[in-house]
Length: 126
Image 1 (cartoon, rainbow, N blue to C red):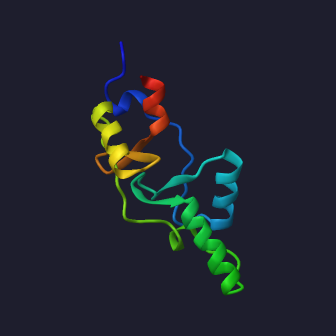
Image 2: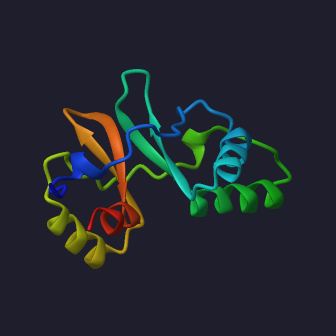
């Protein structure tokens, strides 16, 4: 049987950060795991941000401009979030990805991060 919903194809084991994670450690983790971004969650498991490669570039620019080192993920993460639910159909998801040009989206249920889904996940499913 072919998967039909986001919950059937989403990744459930994720690399996540907290707002208090040192941004240098977060960048190293992204590099080590070959990810271009990761969700940021609070102590309740709620999604509060995303740290992307672009956010990390901002870190590099600010740190070199102001001769600083470091900071926390909360200082650089994106907080305007687009999410999907686990019951969304994968055809609808594919159309959404095509329209919005996201690489991946967090999957949230009842305010909690439960997974992440990517364009590649859709392609592997079909």
